[in-house]
Image 1 (spheres, one colour):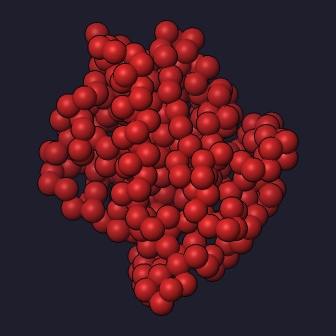
Image 2 (cartoon, rainbow, N blue to C red):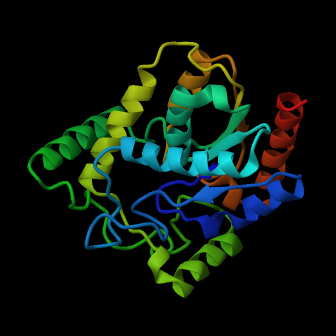
Length: 270
């Protein structure tokens, strides 16, 4: 089961899905509510919005249960990127007895902001949402997607060709496009990240592989490190040269990522 990150959609994951299928896996994926071709939650379908990340767990459960019904009794893995990584960890905290393990890339366990900026974003998003302004964009965000903003200053990948492929997908199907985050989404995200950080040390009972991006400017590698330090079954592999999306990165990064995945799969499913 593959859970994508904020702004993402099933079609973007096709290359990742193909590589898992080449290794003999059946892969299921889904679009979280409010993105991809799932139902959008605001009249402005470009605005990234959710009231509570618990809603994403309803989506995760529905997709996972449908997958279980389809495949029957066989080892199951869950995987997630960024926001989908955070959702995957929440899923594990509730249903880890049903899976063999999990793979995550750059999970959103904290944001790559200074302490002062994190505090300011937390207070502003909470206050704006409480004042009924949750559907408004946070400062610096608008209807533009990352692809709309261009390759030059993007935080996702250093691979211009793969960035262009993502851009072309959105140009061909604009309904897939999601813009910036709203105050409500950000406030919900802060609550979820804090809730996961508050879980007791050692709660994780299944093996987890975390592929962290050394040059990540979106999520906090420090927060990822704290999670792994508190949970011995979590293994971190730091991908040198990678921006936020390792599976959209240059071949050298992807080769390192898949070497780690193959090794972990051999240890986990033996």
